[in-house]
Image 1 (tube, rainbow, N blue to C red):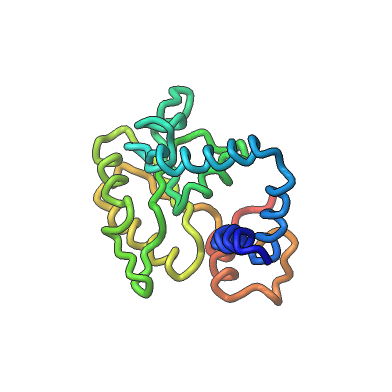
Image 2 (tube, rainbow, N blue to C red; image 1 turned 90 degrees about the horizontal axis):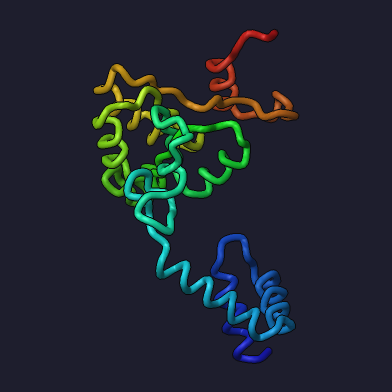
Length: 198
């Protein structure tokens, strides 16, 4: 294999979810593309990496100091949905069900990986709540051990604002799951989050 091709495959396979076989297919596809198209792609990636910012209010990715979601006056500014990563914002937005604001933590608390609360954007969230006007904080954190640790940490920090309602997204058994294959923690969450059947 060409050294140049090996280098491109090596770089592409560093991306999450891209193995060497997929990286090879992508590299060969780029070889078939027009040189101008490949140039546009690489310039776009380079510009994105150099110029993208984090919103000063919610830590979401933005081209400006404040992201379009935070700047949108049509959204419910009294509700903040706390998520781990930018990808979570995109997932929730794709449902078209949520019209409030977001707060991106930048990860979860993980002592094993050396990630402490101070490494996340938790203080930025507390500053937003302390300024007033927030009526509800929705915790949309993963159900991993680290996610649960982060959720309980946030709950404790938010207790100093009794006027703010703190909720969590529903957790439980997914649509189509068979009960015998679901783990105990998921079943426990499903039982705690049960609702009346209408």
